Amino acid sequence: MDEMFHREVAKAKVNLSLNVLGKRDDGYHGLTTRMAPISLVDELEFYKADVYSLECDAEGVPLDKSNLVTMAVRLFQRETGKECKWRVKLIKRVPHGAGLGGGSGDAAAVMRGLNELEGTGLSKKRMAELLGEIGSDVPFFVYESVCDCSGRGEIVDPVAGWDYDVTMLLLKPSFGVSTPEAYKAWIDSRELPDVDYKMQKFIWGRLVNDLEKPVFMKHRFLAEMKMWLLSQPEVEGAMMSGSGSTMMAVLMPQNAEKVLARAKQELDPTLWSAVVKLG
Image (cartoon, rainbow, N blue to C red; front, side):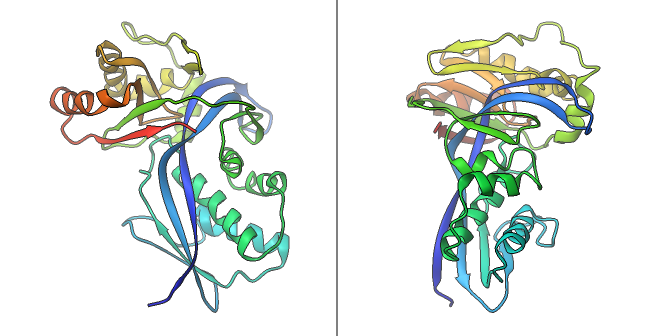
């Protein structure tokens, strides 16, 4: 058995706010969003090897050149000229199609890990610039802190002094949501009756998500989940993260398990769940 040489943690994220500004000339949508890393993580283990390779403990994860981890490795090789002789094992805990940025976080983590292992001294800013080539939200994950992002998501400004104790219950049904499809449907989307889309304000920030409109139009169950969560006495706020399909509920830690048990009984017994801290 090879000996592990280095481990890198890839935190998932939630979008606390997401405002869509309209379609840009380059085909992307302009946006402003505040994203926060959460305590749900994937892990990347690095083993010395003759050539780069990627493996994963989860079924269904593509291990070819389409994987964002491999794309980030190729960017690193192009930038630094290093061969990257590492076997990378990806340990997946963040679900796919959940609006939690699992693949993007993995890509940033492999870049951070290689930067340390190869001693290349790339700045966070430069790593973020490179990673912006493979995904609009990937640069955020370089910083591992609460950030305000703009442009198509690639302009990242860490939020100074954000230090709050916030617990969330994450709930995800068995289906995922396509991010490109959610943005494509945004322009023609409308609010569903009896669904609350209003901004929710807290001492640590605000919850608002413009992608709820197009996603709820296609996936009514997510709108039902949000309104169910908002009706629970223990829940202080609830919203969809990113383009979904994860719904997040703000609550006190001691109330998470009872709300989860109730959700599985009243909504869907197969819900994926996680209790996480922000930051």
